[in-house]
Length: 393
Image (cartoon, rainbow, N blue to C red):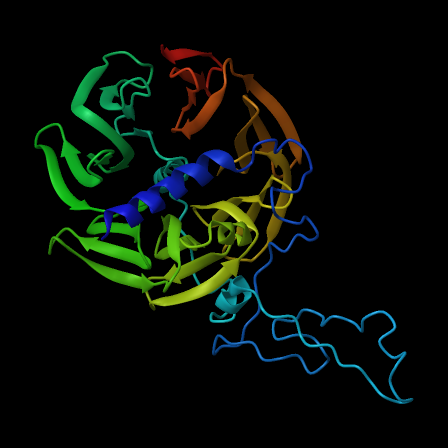
């Protein structure tokens, strides 16, 4: 793969991951996107994956065709009609039309808290992750190096000499990427670092290998063969975010030649048992599978929405956040430096913690919330006790 294209792709990931949702506390129109509608519902499509023109006068994707221009009949013979040309479908509409709508109720999703945390931290650039024993690995914002410590910050040990990022745990094994060479490694204290491959974007580690975003598709790297194969061909579009739950893989697409394409927020679901890819939803930012629930920021309102992948039920929440954790019926999210919770059953929102400084990234573990700040500190909040403070100066 070409270095310059890789650089563009990674820059895109960082740029959009850090930029969207600023000022999300206001009902607002995102930059460059008209806030005329909230279309975060699944697209339609026949079983063949194509949508025919609507005989009732709608366009090829169900949209009404433009009306007559003002005074159009003024210079025409009596009884003449003017037929407006249908609007040219956008690239996003053309892409959606290639897929059938996701069939809610066809697949069952496991409630796996560890996978849910892994998915959420993946979307948030995964600079910190929790191991099964409760300890954490983290990339220090001061030097970018990899460190290991207890959950409360004691016993800090440096693990790498060079800068590491994209941390992810699978069992007792840590996966991480060298931020300079872009090489993905597997690490255990007993065996040290083992080089796997180069060029992974957003990825999800599994028992037998790694799913990852690459140019023009989603790829599978097999531990057994030590090689990669393209699992999903996305053509001219590149997958930018990817999360996995059970045998379903959800990803979002961008156009490397037109960065504004990401504003369409097109999300797709690939089901591994039958190898099919479905169109899932749109106008979405940072779609994250957390068990059977897809958690995402509504692009038009900035608010977090929930989509039940088994029933198709959608819940719009009052919580403004760029990313959020949904567990035990409660949604947790960070907005403007404060941690909020929202109980889905009681429809109640509560402010839990006002953090100091300017938080950049938020990480959830089974018990703690960690915040990376602009001044290169790491703050913490203990969800069990309510204690908070500076975790790393």
